[in-house]
Length: 130
Image 1 (tube, rainbow, N blue to C red):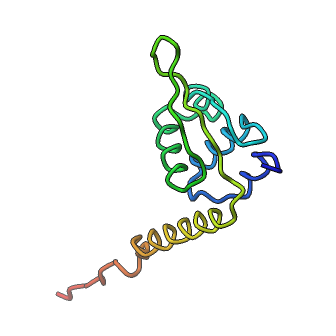
Image 2 (tube, rainbow, N blue to C red):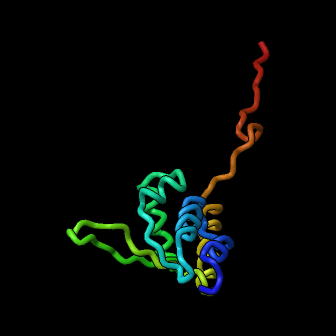
Image 3 (cartoon, rainbow, N blue to C red):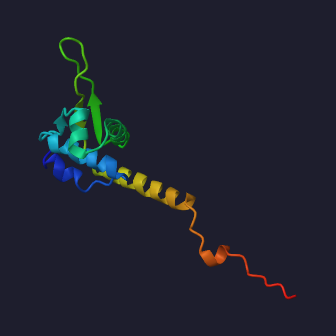
């Protein structure tokens, strides 16, 4: 990567504050080639998110094509942190992420109901004359 991973990650729209925080945290650890291996625990500490939120955000970032992962194991066979490779330099991926974000926003707006005003839902007052 010719620019720092952080500089490339900053303008990317992920559609989620959680995913954005995790992307920036990962980019902070990445070398000039976009490679790093922070643990989920470290990312959770850095972002103040739960480990489960970190896992979901990494999955989402991988689906968006912004990163890929490679499992790593210690010599004794235990799991180690994944090797993460950021791919932020592709403008086509940025526009795909932006389109995905815009599409999600449009879908959310169309499924949300507009709040009803009090006057529209109030029943008329009927007085009885005796």
